Image (tube, rainbow, N blue to C red; front, top):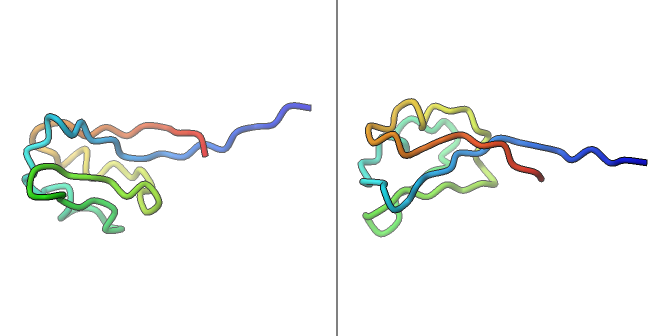
Length: 70
């Protein structure tokens, strides 16, 4: 009997390339993104639903939406 894995979408930020502008924080409807120590954005994966608004808004294009197993 095979088990099907549940998958969900989450935002992934290339933290080393993030410029911490805060654009993603402003558009996230679930407050799942915050700026850490003023140098990079981080995603709370428990809150993120992978809507993609942050990725569309990011001027540095360092956010992508990925499917992950849960």
